[in-house]
Image (cartoon, rainbow, N blue to C red; front, side, top):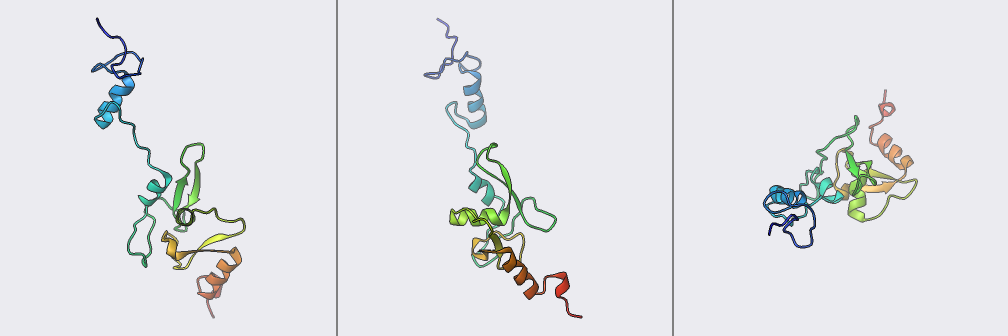
Length: 146
């Protein structure tokens, strides 16, 4: 008696190679096991694979793509439907705290290093506080004294 369906219990798909259907054969070919399910990395795993984490006191630079101003860019979301581009330091703050960034607030760098994603270097603040900090530290083009 020849079997015309996959030899995996509960699978009624047509048999192809090694006694398995195409799906189970490809799982075996890719992962070494016809029952293996591929692991799609979570957003957190994808994010931290692009962060060069050093000691907690050091900056953790973003190693992925960035804006022209040096801020990291991250494709956030667990699926294509949820996908959105997020600035990496904002995503670092969200992942570290588990909270959404409240409306009207920004994630500010205490270290003044745009690619830094170390959550201990990030705080919430207003855009006005960010501009005040920039001018106070002499990082604005108008803050140079004549």
